[in-house]
Image 1 (cartoon, rainbow, N blue to C red):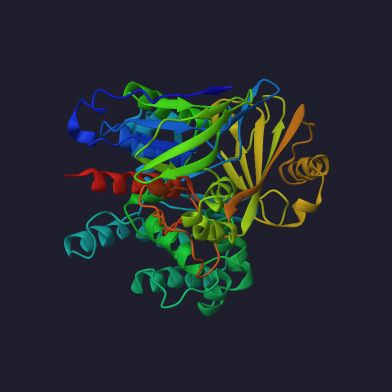
Image 2 (image 1 turned 90 degrees about the vertical axis):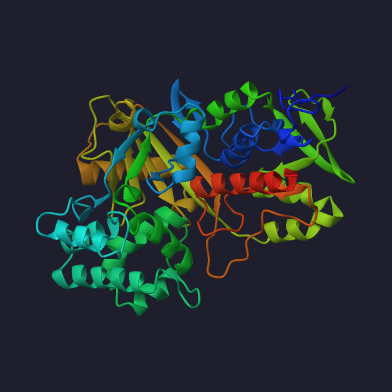
Length: 478
């Protein structure tokens, strides 16, 4: 059975408002990258058609249901410096104050280590003001707050606290730019960050940000994260924990925004082939029911599917085969999330809590964050021994850790393990990531794994989508 879905033109479509200059976009993938591109284009009155193979939008950051409870396919932390993501959430109707629990920077490893970003007390606050007046910085810098936090961190000796603060100052002096990329482990060793200090402070930050073991992780990408989160304005270092599931947070709202601007969003619709026809692009797609969809011609296509799907689609197009090979060469790291539903009275000491030397690395109290009382999400990032365990065994290991370390003696009512085995690319030194442009000028590539300063985060995904849209704006200008 052949059917042809036609994108609904916006009031500025062909024959209408000339702002779109005859552009008509296909976006393959309805995750954060694809929907960011869709919103950016729709805001310019450029008609878009989004094709998402899953039943729901969001990609690897999507909402899922289990036992009548709304979960997420992993826990994703946003930072105050994620300006593009936060701006788009607001643009499509979100409310940052309502949608997030916003916390000042605080890293707590239960009964082992705690770092807080305090408000600078007198007379330290004067240093910040003098720096502004002297022109050394234009906004109150969270780096000074971070230094104060390092010098008062609990669980470290004075020598370790001083060493960590000196490391941050050294990074500021070199403007967070290395002459040559190396591993985070080697960088820490070069700056005399001892093993315990690295384990309690820098390794948790590296794992949380890059989802890559410190011995493999790119030092330069880690410094990019530290630069933007700890060296900008004070709110840049804030931790934002979503109160709503990740599909509802942005992609679902973005779909409504796209439709209101004359675009179309297809779910359960998998693109099987990209077929170039000179200056136009044709897609072949299938519905869940097995029917084949041959689309009308598009001026451009943005491929914002998963790396595996993007490589598969590009491999079949001779001009795009080199890009497919570059994508296929990437290594990946997993993220496991163990959800434990306890009685609603069970709570953690903090909304977000780390554990030292356990299977679970970070715990999230979904009751304190999103009103899902008794629901604990335990996150295990990057490769490790947990991958060798069956899901049932892993869940029991985490239950045991919560019993021994936090005194939670009750057994959970149910558990669910979500394993995203290719959650992010392995962010290693000198990694050649594919560009957002391709040898075909009207085919672009978006995703958190494409070239950029950041590791695989929601912000990098959104920025890649916006960047692709920007290329099309530029091309569409008279």
